[in-house]
Amino acid sequence: MALTFEQSKIVRGSIPMLKEQGERITGLFYSTMITAHPELRNMFNLVNQANRRQPRALCSVILAFASNLSHTHELIPKLERVCHKHCSLGIRPEHYDIVGKYLLQAFAEVLGSGWTPQLHGAWSKAYSILARMLIGREVSLYKDFGEWQGWRSFRIHQKIAETEDIYSFYLVPSDGGSLPSFVPGQYISLRIMIPGKGHLQPRQYSLSETPRPDYYRISVKRDRGVQVGKGVDAFQLRPGMVSNELIDDYAAGDTVEVTHPAGDFNFDTQCYSTMPVVLISAGSGVSPLTSILNTIVDNQPDRPISWIHCSARRAPFEDHVRSIARGRPNFAMRFFRSKVAEVDYRSGTARGEGLRMDLERIDREQLHLDHGAAEYYISGPEAFSFDMSKFLRGQGVDPQRIRNEWFTTGEVA
Image (cartoon, helix red, strand yellow):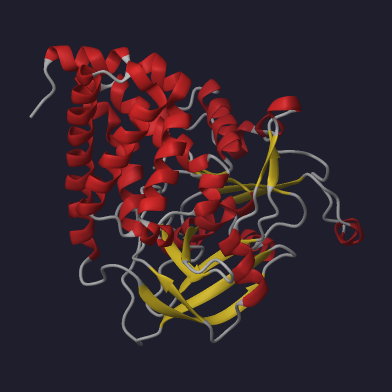
């Protein structure tokens, strides 16, 4: 049942309150819900909650929904990302009743006397509408997954150091069964038991190889935490538990649990094209773009490619990328490195050292800015992806030709 005109007005009227108190509401929601339902600790990434990413993500979705009540079709791209994440984590329709209960309780506790019966009624119905939208799409995605529903045991076949901080894990099904294909750019959820915590913890990892019938590959970066903001508003993001545990304590022969590949950042493998593609990444954002790169090289040999990457030091898969460049005349590459390694000076590969990514330093021809059909794939931290997209749009690139994958919880609940 749709919202009445008066209820829609009430929900839209709560937008200023959401902007002011939204993260406080969603933060309280997560803490009370998980206290009441500790089994959900196996589903939600607790570091993202401690770092305030998860509450910010949920707040973003709620605010977007309240702002688009009269034209919810505009929410589809945002909700598509949410639905893929939910299916990757195994969220089911019954979980929405739990979420609704504790979300409305958090509204009431934070707003106090401001949480009127009218506001409660309007938001209760609004949440039901949002939940139905999400559930409907998620049911469809689960059908696409076929027989593989939920978590599946995988064995680590190989663990390879790509750089000082990034390791690739080659994963094969423990049951010896077949692997479904995936769309280059997608991710899997992986979960392990965290020592001393008493519960499982999931994390999403982009698949870093073209689809293979016998294994999946992910490339995991050590998470050291990072300071966000400046001055009195600064805070330290806690390092991720899952990535560091995998790197430090897991080896070939160990097992992990994995869900079906998902994600709406992907490269269309059904359409053969000779149009240029520009792959722009930073840090561990290289993972999905490596999958896309390998797929293009294997299947679209006539397609011009520009590979642009920024990392602190030597990039993961750099030797692989350079080998492609040597055998492919329509391939251009540029590496930026924000820190200088002595070995790169000795080897003579120190061009671009000490520089952060700056697309203005790259020739327009290499970026294919004057080609009206070039496609751009950007993957990396949220601020990086925003800056790269902003530059391209400023150069006249149609936003429809720019695809982004940002490595944060971001707007995903």
